Length: 385
Image (cartoon, rainbow, N blue to C red):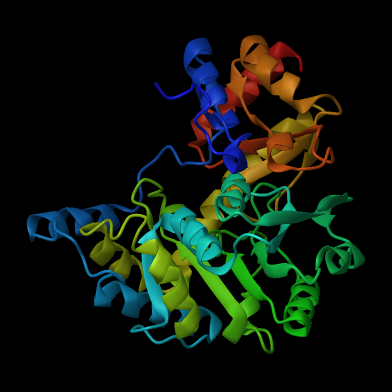
C-alpha cells in the first residue's frame, strides 16, 4: 500500500485553502460571506442569452485549441480599441480556462528548476502554487502600506532580481489590495525587465474595474515591453461570470506558443458555448465598461463608508472587488472568530504573504448586492466590533 504522505515535496504547504475553511464557517454559522471574490448576481442578461443561444445552436463540442476565431478576433480588437496594442488574432492570442490556467501555463512554460520568479506580496494564492509546481523559486517584494494606499520600494525590487531571475509576475489592478500600479511604478518594472532580459507576466483581470476616474495602463504599452510581456485577462470579473472560466493570453507568437504548449496538456480546451458569448460582450462600447465600474464603485463606497463609521481602519481600494482593513490584531484569529461574534466572514490577508507584513490585514469582498452589504454592516454594528 502507498504511504499516507503522497504529496511531492514542492507542494507541501499548499493544503486546504483559507477560502475553503472560511466558506465552511460561513455555512455552519449562517454568516454573510464577504470572503471569496465572486458576485452574487448573474452577468448581463444579453451575455447569458448569447451563451444559451450558442448551446442551442450546437456549440457544445471541443472548440479549436487556441480558442474560436471569433473570440480571438474580439480579444485582439479589444486590445487595440482600449490600449492601442496590436496583436494578431491568429498566433498572438490564446484562449484559456480562466486567467488562473493562463497564469499556470505561463509559469510552467517559462520558468523551471533553478529559476527565480519575482512576485509582489500580497499575491493571489495561485501564484505561489504555480511557481512551486514549476520547480522554480519565488522572490517576493512587499507592497507596503503608504498612507491610504500601497507602494513598493524600487530598490527592494532591484535587489530581488538576480542572475537566476527568469520572470517578474505582476498583478494590476491588484488583488487583494485594490492597488493600481502607477506609470512610474510600471516603468521601474519595465526598466529592470529590459536591463536583465526578463519576461513579465501581467495579470490584468480587473482591467475594467477601476474607480474614481482611473484608467488601466498595461505594462505592454511601455517602451520595449510588448515583446517580453505575457498579458493575461478574463471575462469572469468584468462580466460577473466567474464560473465560465474564459480567460486569455496576449503576447508575441514565441511566448504564446510556449504557453500553448503547456496549456494544451492542462485543460486542452474549454467553454465552447461561452466563447461566442464573450466575443460579443468584448465588443461593447467604452460606456458599457464604465457603467460596470461605476456600479461596483458604489458597492465599494457602501462597504468602506460603513466600516469607517464603525471606527475601522479601512484602506479604500482604487480598483477590484476587495477592500482591506487593518484590524491591529492577529487577522487569522480575528477572521476565525468573526463569524461566531458577528455572523460575517472575511479573509485574513496573511495567507497572501510570505512575510509577516500582512498579519493584521483583513480582506473584504464588496462585489455583492447592496442589501447583502447592508446586512453585513448591520451585524458588525450589533456586535460592536
